[in-house]
Amino acid sequence: MAVKRPVEERTGTFAPEYLPAVIELRNVVKHYGKIKAVDGVSLLVGQGEIFGLLGPNGAGKTTMIRMLITLTRPTAGELYVAGYSVAGRPVEVKRRIGVVPQQNNLERELTGRQNLLLHALLHKIPGPERTRRIEELLAYVGLQARADEQIQRYSGGMARRLLIARAMLHRPPILFMDEPTIGLDPQTRRKIWDLIQLMNREGVTVLLTTHYIEEAESLCHRVGIVDYGRLIALGTPAELKASLGEVCAEFLGSGGTSRRFFPTRAGAKEYAQNRDDDVTVRRTNLEDVFVELTGREARELSSG
Amino acid sequence: MKQESCHPVKPNLTPAGAALAGFLPGARRGGGYLDWFPVVLVMGMVWRRRWWRFIIGGINRPLIFMAIFAWNIGGSSAAGGYLEFLIPGLVIMSAVTASYTDLVGWFTQRRVYRRELDEYLLAPISNTSLLVGHVLGGGGKGFLIALMVFLTAHFSVVKFSFSFLLLAQLLIVSLAFACLAVAVAMVAGGDKEMLMFTNLIIFPMTFFCGTFFPVEQLPGPFAALSRGLPLTAATYNLRALALTGVNHFSWLGQSAGWLAALYLAAYLLLKIKRED
Image (cartoon, rainbow over all chains, first blue to last red; front, side, top):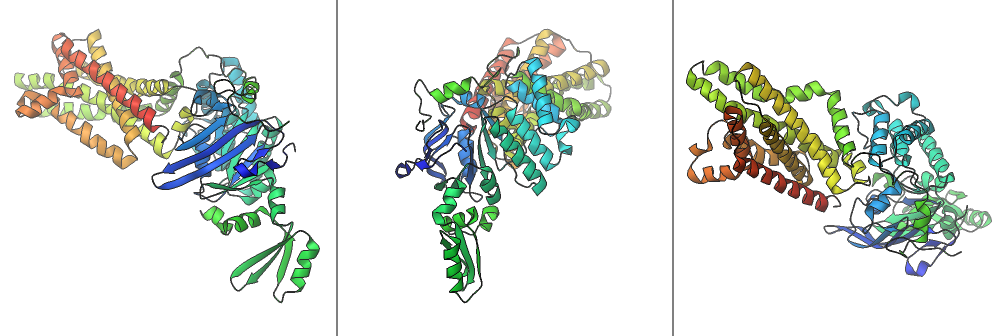
């Protein structure tokens, strides 16, 4: 993996050392009335990364994505995508991004192929190339056999795969995915993960939001944890876990589940032996990082 | 190499952005059509799938009105005169209903609930193209439905004059109300608000703008108000064109003025509200 340690943490700007940034947020704020949906976020995402914004529903992840993809205007701050100011050059930004929204926004009365045709026309992909790319992408996401069925007959997983195909049709170098696997069964979820990794290997930078710990841990090169509109931690999953300690000793105390973190398994085992109650010793995961940083249980990730 | 920020070196473009520009085969090339074309195409494709529903939904009300009046007021010359008066108003009413009602629902659903509009907002097309596409799609449908009502009446009830200016008047009013539909859809937060606007604006207009009786019969201030509304000028001019073949440029101009004003309102609301 090419991305190295975060630097410049003092300024709140977290930057991978090696890659040119293709997504940048600078002190971005978004208010909805009195609610601060995004509260002074600065972030750089490098070219070729799969970057995950992890946080509970309502944390501000979707708002960040909507600001980056030109759909929502920030209250303050600056955003750049592919080198272009989102506020100043939105059309240039739109040419360089693909978006997989959280909600299925395919034209449901049209077929899968017609939806791709619409996207190709909107992006002015020329005729012969248009047909070739549509066929290629239908094959890529495994929907050739169902391409002429109306979207309303598609399952959630099929619609999600078609959304990915649509987002990739104009060959954007940057892909935004808002909760790409929400509501999907584990098998389909893994297929989507494979697709994301495949696209990334072909050079596509991916910024995704998720509230699935496992997704962030297994898919993302770097993860930013978002809570109450703020970016509260950022790094590779390994770095974030190491910041607590590689090993976790977990036990049920009088105030609920408690966790202690240790750099080594030996330290955790020694701690467990000195306690009367049952202690589970295991590897630290991102869920532990989230709980420690936010004080909220990880189940709140999905309950919002 | 250290991390490079996206900060613009030239106007909003960094070396990273310049490098990425080469990643876009064909994205900048024109497709030989205007940007609004895909918007109209999709509306056409959806409507083609359910064409019979749209046609029946569009023509049933004016035809029912026509049938009720034709059967119930008898065959006297006064009755015939009233039908001649009424039918052009019903044609305009069907243009308004088919262009406004369907488009406001289409747009609100796609903006607020189903989010299909995001697909257009994320495409590299301008607000103008987005608006023109929807107005042409919605207005075009209203125009076709109104033409069907007109031709049905022409061949079954009353023989009317048929001219280019009559078609132009019909098209202008259809496009004007399609603009109003987009403006309302950009303001409405959902179905209930959309219905409230429709009941507040469209419903009274269909009754007080000269469809069923001359606006001169309204009390003074209301008559003056009615004469200024977009439906009145359109109804009066279409009636004059259909019955006598004479065009009134003041009414046609007033309709065109309303089209321009409503287009501007829709454009501004689209521009202001799209990023909220």
